[in-house]
Image 1 (cartoon, rainbow over the protein chains, first blue to last red):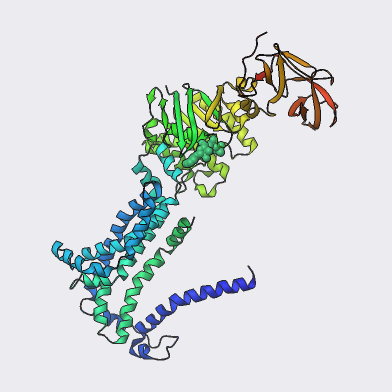
Image 2: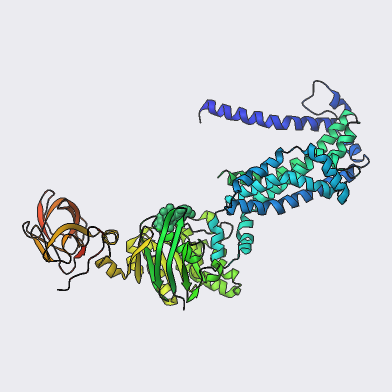
Length: 268
Length: 350
Ligand SMILES: Nc1ncnc2c1ncn2[C@@H]1O[C@H](COP(=O)(O)OP(=O)(O)OP(=O)(O)O)[C@@H](O)[C@H]1O
Ligand SMILES: [Mg+2]
């Protein structure tokens, strides 16, 4: 690589990292730095008089624990549903050629283009009727609808990256279709499946609109914080924001290797 | 008892015909090589026998049982894939053991069979490794070992030795033949290497653009090819074909004359080693272009009646490029072909 090429590469890397890391860092400084840090201007680079006080106060706010639990349940269920439904759909897309496969791919993506706001009222009505309203399960169903397109398309790419011959070899050596999937396809797909599961989890964890509309008392953390924080002082908002982004970061960090593997597979 | 009967198998991909009414019978314990150029349908035929590819027509019988609609797992065969298909998430040991494990074979038997197959293919040092850490040739041997370990009644192999170096290939070939013979395994062996087919097979089925054009013992395929394609494809150097005119039962060209079937224009086919070198005015007039000493013989390349011809001459011969010599094919060993159809004409027993 030429010198200027290397310079471009590195400045690109620095810019991208800054784009992501600086806001996170500032939120962190605000969350741990107390009132003073939150209001200080210009912002200091180093945190001043750090303390866990705000975070702890924040966690003790009435209802935060319950909301966090709801978020975990909703995100966990979303993860489960989108994998249970998305992986078989992805497998079918990858392995079978059927009429309308391409149209189906497009339709799957188009569900994301459908504005949730229009659905909100009818959904609320149906959820109230069926008893799903104000439950994590109800929220997770909507979140599954949001996460499913990604789960389907990403797993389709994943399964496509696993040569058909592996399965065929398994069949020849005595496996049924399901045995071949269990013994050969799933082990090879596991990293990618884990990554798309985490992705579904994060989608649910971050989603706020549907969660706000479909719950009143059993709010998820994002929805709950949205109401609480709009009425709190700014340094508590930092604390709340920090608590919201931490799980996503930890999760993505934990599966980063698989995400790389996933890209490696799908870009083939 | 596990012979294979392939009965008028057809296969079309879209509009392209990959297999055109292919019929082949492989007796129990027989070793048949499917030989043909790239793209002639060998892999497709093998995959249809295994049940991995749908067929457009025809039937497959294994051991007198119609298996045409059975799943691959129920056909009772093993296969070596052209691109190995060795499972990357299992050690070599587990790969070789795979077929036995799915059949829930006792651990002791698994161990014994895996060891024997590994020993045969010289892969014992790698048993605990993952395939990613093997070379192409080593992976290919794992694929062969995996098929042998299940002790199948029917074994399908798709170019199983293509990636080995010449020495190892020679050794594996001999070992494979011995083991399969001892076990009485019915084998269909795909290759485009004709020496491999000649050395291994009880019979060779020569394929050409979706058809089996000849299926016979190696010596017959070699000496009496059914078509000019077979003559040109089998044997090195390939069989020579020279246009010749037949008048009232005698074909004549230059100083050569022989009793021939048919009438009018014919093709005279002869192997490069079935000739006698003579004076230019006797026999076919051969214009030498290149003389290549090969150690055991000299390979002469040149033309007869403007057709490219290769003949084998003894080492002592003294010829130079540009010279003309006479070539006299052994009349007992020549074949006669129709120039229109390329098919062999019946031999005249004289
Ligand atoms: N899935 C497919 N779709 C369309 N055409 C195919 C498919 N598989 C094979 N063909 C075509 O069928 C013909 C036979 O292919 P096949 O793989 O059987 O050849 P082969 O004899 O095994 O060749 P090689 O020696 O190169 O392995 C080829 O012309 C190939 O292009
Ligand atoms: Mg092939």
